[in-house]
Length: 259
Image (cartoon, rainbow, N blue to C red):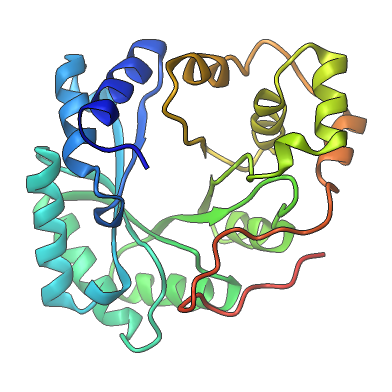
């Protein structure tokens, strides 16, 4: 995880290249640097979309409001575009959490609210509760990459009007998989470009979130819109095995089965 001046420099470089989405979290320890990079870039704040999160131990209303204010102060920004529940916590009623998040929306501190790492059953509960709270679940940030395509969960999000946002979109070992390497060699693209283009052509992701600290890689990973993968390549990439899930801590929910 990038911290300090290096993180700020990478954010500045990414904005220069054309990126307009910044994803951070209190648990990442880089909200300060991310916000500083946005300010140093000189870009109009309204052109950026900034996402941060509330951790599972801060989901009760008072603690959530305090967490969000800390994030605003640390980022040095006037508002957060998207505030996510980072991980579900069955010990806290989702209605309480959403009520506090709605309060932040009404105050102008947060534009959109959402969740992360929510399987279908928890997503359904949250969508229903959000309607009663007078708000709407904007997104569900989930681990998705060729070896974990999450077909059921992605389809469930789309059917409920919730945007699925892919984190770890290239996996860890996917880029060295022979099938990915073969498509990259044949098309003259990098394995990272192949994986990210696969996300875009699935047609349901507003944005995959690649994580890199190298300016050269940041530039290459932005060059995704001047080529297309064939239907055959898309099918191959959607069936890269074996299934791998890289983020499943002790407090993770029961995951949806994969097809």
